[in-house]
Length: 198
Image (cartoon, rainbow, N blue to C red):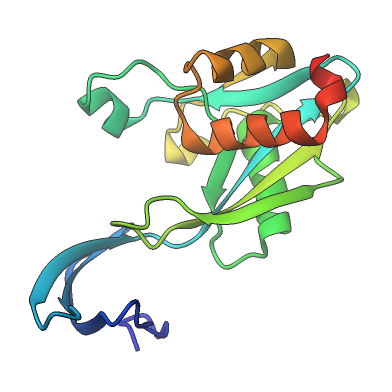
């Protein structure tokens, strides 16, 4: 068992030999000793902040989608430009559908009824335990009932962007959608609803 009670699996003859917590807080970082099939004992570091959710709300009639942007320390530290992102957040022990609806209202001020689950995926399996449930969700102008922008006490400084689906498709094709979850969701929408991009 891992330190959080999660069963530790064996993979291709490798196994977890020991886990030591290095940092505990909003994220947890563990030093993991792995016994490899060749007998070597190797050290890895693993980040854990729990599972999350993300959603791409789209208006099929107006052929638009809602994305957000916010100051991201990691992007800024790396010298990157601001990134357009799908609405997302930590699961925080809620069920994914409930949590993603709450995030949509909190971040973009949009009320979502129908949700289409796309996938639950590992975001960075080499270093993180994070798994994201990704959703597509239709909305209309009438569903934009909140102010969005994130929680004031979290200092997120979220900006909401309503963009044409045609632009998002072009950005995906030209390598300008730089957030992985957003790229996956835009491509999933293109595959499932090609009529919205015709």
